[in-house]
Length: 217
Image (cartoon, rainbow, N blue to C red):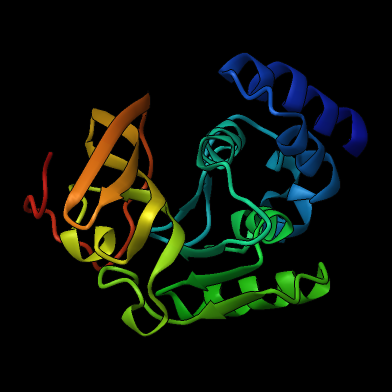
């Protein structure tokens, strides 16, 4: 496989057509090598437009979904980010290139170890991986400028939204199969939030979150 040609095709044929046009995001996808974060057994599929299986219950988001979420969050260099569902660390690496600091939570012990090793190898010293689920967020480190859920949940728990700064953004994939939607929530005041639906998709569940509705707009 010609890796650079495959990377080019991924960006031009999958990601740009999904309205990912931010030059800084497209450049990051060239610089942060996705294949370095894909398990050995699936490296040949690193650039394919599918979720890749990581464990019996966890999957790596498709490239275009990762790219679109990253673009919509508009992460700035001075910001602190919480990622829930680090998986193998690829999105955490992308976030690390944009943010001042990233804390990535991963419930699966094996994946957390992989993510930490991958990020260390990539030289991302501003990204920390913690082996825990993210349903309660990380109150000890709040407030956050950005929270990203790298997988799907049935509903957004209020506890996560309350850990945003005013002006902070949270992106997640919400709903149940066959209908899930990526949403972007912005905290506009002490008790006020605005929500925008970004796109329809389907993604694997994050562990630790309730299936029953916990918060709705």
